[in-house]
Image 1: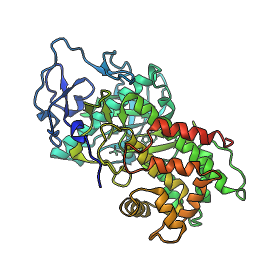
Image 2: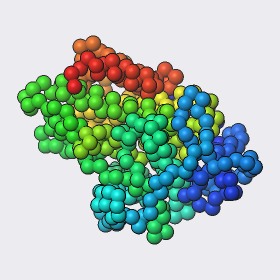
Image 3: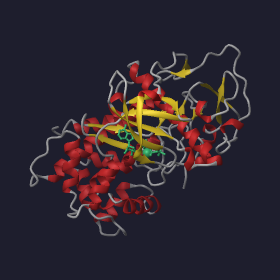
Image 4: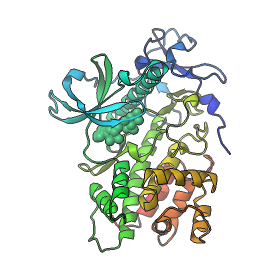
Length: 429
Ligand SMILES: Nc1ncnc2c1ncn2[C@@H]1O[C@H](COP(=O)(O)OP(=O)(O)OP(=O)(O)O)[C@@H](O)[C@H]1O
Ligand SMILES: [Mg+2]
């Protein structure tokens, strides 16, 4: 069962420069304007420069996305003011922070005022790791990431989607250095949610108590003594992370952005600001019109970013695009409350079973597990459900609705946030 309806409409787009086709994928999105080309055509894998030419209107200005509204469209705004020279940074090429499927992230620091010696990270495509079409793919994703960060930054600075300041990594700018394009972010101290899970799975005691305490402290929550009720603390941690991630999704949806790779490895728990920050906009898609007739950064042929978190529709549903990330967030959140799926391998198995045996129906799975009729139930699954059920069952119901198979039935980020706020208001901070 798959709900791919409409995705063919979404992937047939290219960037067209007002000065003709760019020769490098790096330059495509940020100075481009959108043009659509027809029907079921697909972007050529890794060949963004091969698109058929669609001449721009003669007087068209360079277009940048402004705020997303009900009548969201592209509108001219000035280019970002914050272009940063990479000479302003010292990049520690021997200190790698992360190596992803296409990008490599290094420690860096700012070496000029303002904010001299600010800890930073610098992300680039290491050309030596790739060749041929793979390199082109990597550069294309990188161009999308730069475009997305530019857009987020514009919307934060203009105050139009100000909440994203707290829910994303602080993007400082981009530049070219030593033949490579770089993105610079402030380095926020702390672990990703995946690192928290890894630590919990590896912990000798295995009871997960350290995990919840550590996560709670990183989030700035008041942590009661170890012998106090851990269920309550787990619920508070869960509510806080869920709230922050949904705030990020609501911000993204106001920009017309689908992140497409919401997963614990891309969620940083900032221990200094006690903030939950979404990273890695490299898989993002921008939906341009209310009817989503045009998209940047989305190519159905490349498929979903991470199979374990992707919603069942796999490709963005044209009518309910923002429900995509809601599913991935809910899958990530389950790992907070179910100890047996903090380990990546166990989570993969759970994710597979949850889809193939239970059609992502949390109610069905829960009833089978409670009755002892489910196979391969992860350790601590029932305890996790107890955390969700609480006294009124509302949190369980919210999660059930965030995980529904069909995007049109699944909650939007806005609806999910409204429901969560109701639940949160009943729990003391
Ligand atoms: N602003 C930041 N502050 C602190 N750590 C960061 C920051 N940005 C990224 N990191 C760290 O670097 C890791 C990798 O970053 P990111 O997810 O952007 O790239 P990636 O996953 O390596 O690349 P890809 O985009 O190919 O998936 C993160 O998991 C996180 O640990
Ligand atoms: Mg990543």
